[in-house]
Length: 148
Image (cartoon, rainbow, N blue to C red; front, side, top):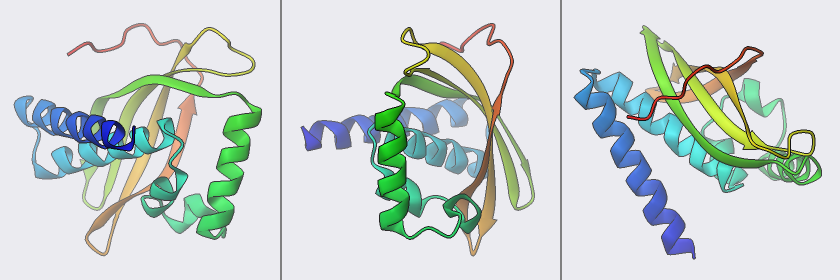
């Protein structure tokens, strides 16, 4: 089971990098797209320890890794969150900051049928490593989801 998850995450990461490269993205765009997919896969599989390592202190909000994992596991369980799918529609890079326009398809206790949500994830370059610093969930309709 664990090898299947690792293989799936590796393939998703590879396809993400290839897609950005194919679309003419630069090295930073490919890196950020791959990190976005790794973060998404970690949260989807409820691997919050991996997610913790990918976020800034701003996202950690003073919590230790153990507390962060415990709290996110509790939130996901109590809200009955099931992340079905997700992806990136655009990446805007400005120096050491990047904005990733993304979408997620998920269900929860209030939405038993999965819904689509848009978000903007803010990444920052810290000591040569891109880290997720902020996620904005946009309260707007998702009219289309890229299939490429």
